[in-house]
Amino acid sequence: MKKSEDAVSIPYAKEQILSKVINVVEKFIQYILVEKRYSKHTIVSYKNDLLQFEKYLSSDYEESIEKATPVMIRSWMALLVQAGIQERTVNRKLSSLRSYYKYLIQNKIRNDNPVVNIKVLKTRKRLPNFIKQQEMDNLFNEIDFSNEFSDQRDKLLLYILFFTGIRLSELINLKDNDISDKVIRVIGKRNKERDVPITPFLRKEILNYTILRSQTFEESGNDLLLTNKGQKLYEKFVYRKVKHYLSLVTTQKEISPHVLRHTFATQMLNNGADLNAIKEILGHSDLTATQVYTHNSLEKLKGIYKQAHPRSENKK
Image (cartoon, rainbow, N blue to C red; front, side, top):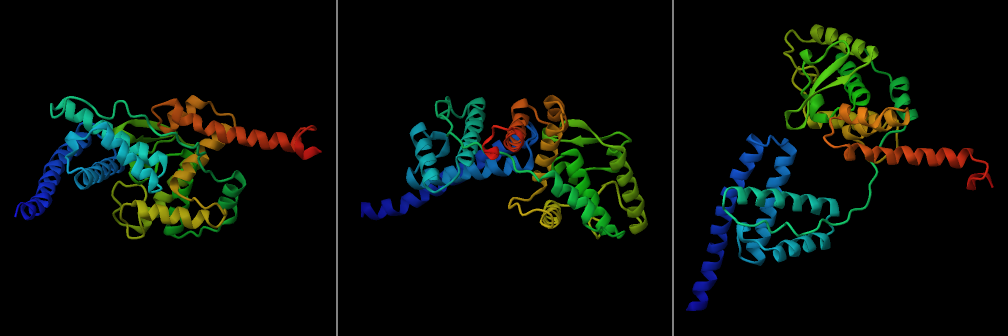
């Protein structure tokens, strides 16, 4: 009889654990949303990571996330690696746990952080992908953009991403009053505001577009870039447009709005821009995030050396 009672009580215990944890996680999510002002993508990632870890704990240990030990966390990390999850992703999940336990300590739900002495996994260096300058030249010089609103909108969308290096979310949220003669005002991560310089050429393209937009839609609101129906752009729309046009000029597999951000930074660096200036334009909080582009620049220099130096292996 006792065996039968245990069989019934275990699933119920797991259900209780899950319900309790979801409530605590939701409070944490509200905290990083309202007080920390994390981005939407970061918040979704944190929530998924925490609930995934909780599910693992309740299944393998019948334990709540508040009572997790370093051994349990390391066991979960090992399971993720065995499942083929990339080291960078595992480290992000570990970071989610670290922030969550700090929150629990602050709210006196737990006295210690079990992640403190757990080291992040070593990651393979991955250079940011970018589009070659000749390919970008081909995009704007060889592709025929008609005078229709949709084509002019697409062209401006690509221009802004390539000439400013702003993020996808920043592009979507651009307003008419964010544009001035020399800069565009961008609201970046955690609502940090910055000014990104624009060239007279880009300013003229924006002006021509807004004139066409007003002729196309009686009321266009304050959003700069609109869909064919006069509505605010959304992420999948921009992804689809970028993928379509870049696929016409490059065979590179990874194509996205963020690749254009990488392209902007790489070309700026290759053409002599100061690293700190690029950092400010991109809105990086730390120079380390910007320094990754120096590797692309070095690779270019190595290629030039091999082609030009009389003693290089290509000259034998």
